[in-house]
Length: 381
Image (cartoon, rainbow, N blue to C red):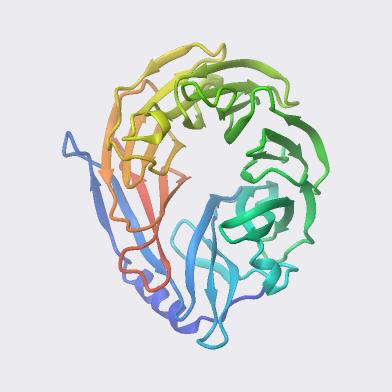
């Protein structure tokens, strides 16, 4: 990995930071009380480079990593590549640079599904799929590869960790320092940071796809995935609880197709899911499962009714943050809505939890080929 030379932009950023950057307020929709403030709001872009954020995580030292793909370089010499930004909680750019992955330009174009996962010591794991491209996109998935990105810019050699066939879309750093990977052919595996597989499962009967994982406070793992066991019947979402060795503890099916899980207190697991058939119209709910997998509460339908919207669920210090397209809704541990806001985003919106609040990575609104990062901090009650 090489450090990008960006003196003018860094000077601009340092100046903006010195004068206080941009400070705004997010207000509660119902009460009008100030729930969050934006400590800073900064644009990360370097003309003529054009970045599209793919993933973002907070590492074990509280530093935000944003992984981007896009066009890098001057006109006539530009190339397609990947870059990473490391940003501290004050908005300072600690590092930015193009990833020196051991891939040719042709090989880079035959990759997909870049995902980050936090590791102990401040490093992060990077997982990507090797693909074979066809006229309509990927025609075959040739396996998942793992590398480790160091805070000093180092990139470890790529290691094949996932068998050919699945499209590995989900990666999670586990509390024991290992990684959990999930694919669209029922593949789930745990491996250490050296790429050695601890255990592997194949959920084929029924076939489970589009997994979502969460570390629970008691050391177990919560997982949701679309159940394709009856393609002609109603959509079903399977929700499971596994022990650290991948053994099934609890399982149940729900009448939904898509879901995202997040940890709650005392080993509970929260699930944000869409009840609308085949993603039409959108009918979003949040529910909580206790350690015995009994449903404790379920919220009323969440706005907006957007078909096929991108959504996520994030655990905060004292509740959950549901993101549905550009709408953010916060709930306390009992499922009561306490705050709502709509972000202006013309492209992708990524939510990453932080200390006493969260980060927003925003694209598509008045960006110069880059992205914004906002730091939202909860006001003290």
